[in-house]
Image (cartoon, rainbow, N blue to C red; front, side, top):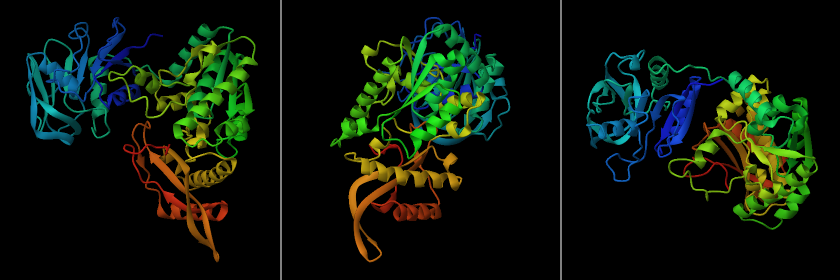
Length: 510
């Protein structure tokens, strides 16, 4: 089935992915492409959205796309930079703003138009720019103003072109989703036919056609992405899917057995491989975070390759790559720095494996992956699992890794996570875990002085992991959890709680 597609041209804004997610929430399929890589064939797109940008349209280096195949030929919406771009290069004027146009504002004037149907004066919007549109472009018609921004929204007569200087995609713009829906559904006539059920049906058909009777190998991690990818492939090719779940010795307490049981209950063809001794041997004495990641990645590839070779005639490697990974690799600004940390996906499999790659989830955002899993009847417990790093506890033990340190951290982590669940806090947290610090501190237990380990607890809230804030857990919860850890986990005498946000800190400590 051919969906009505929406094209989002990315000018490097931090909010571009958010625009796509809002559009997808309207059950409309959209794709993000860099502004300088406009698809040659745009016939399949029913509408185009221009994103914001950290650049100024007045700068020499400003992104300057060729819109000749789009402008006046497709319904077009310019957001923030997109609105200023359409004004600046079409007879209008953009100048530095006298007042700071950042944060919450309210629409003080709205012209009656299908674009603002259902939106009333006083509606809160989110501004984020230092330039402002002084004069509208040729044939521009004012649609909305705020107290400080006269030209907050406009349309261009004679074409289906609309523009807004605020960000409808952020939560602070109260009617932002309604405005996007007005533009895409009422004005551009896009069908709302992108649903989890339709995705499952179409993907399973495509996989059947693509894979035929070929064998496929997939590395399961116990996480949401690889599990949903496995279920889709299982629907398409059944026992021709060979799943391998490797225990690297750095999983949570009892996780290897628990997850294996869960997978078998889902009808998957799974082999569990306990390689924990091999990983711990390879990691002996290594304390550099990047060094540890590389060792864990290398040994995983060796183990995975051994197991894949044991299956005759495997043609394909399946991966749980999701859409943000794809976008980052082709982003307008070259994506985030690749040196922040090496990626732990199986994406680095070496050429000698000679397998073709299949990625059933590469069009989906994380929240969509969960909805697709739910539509296939997968367990809410599995779908609601917090993200867990590929190197596991290896990057939550600061410094070198030993079997004893892994034992300590597994015990601490198990108490923390089970308490979050029993207090009803787990589902309101994006990710939680414990870090074993490379310091000993003095304590008192009974009449004895102790000199033992310190652990840090970390719980963050986020929508996609790109930014995150620490969760304000109740003091009573932290008190009970700290007491339980110190009383029950031999080797720990101090518990601290991490209250750093990302940025500047990262979610993990290494």
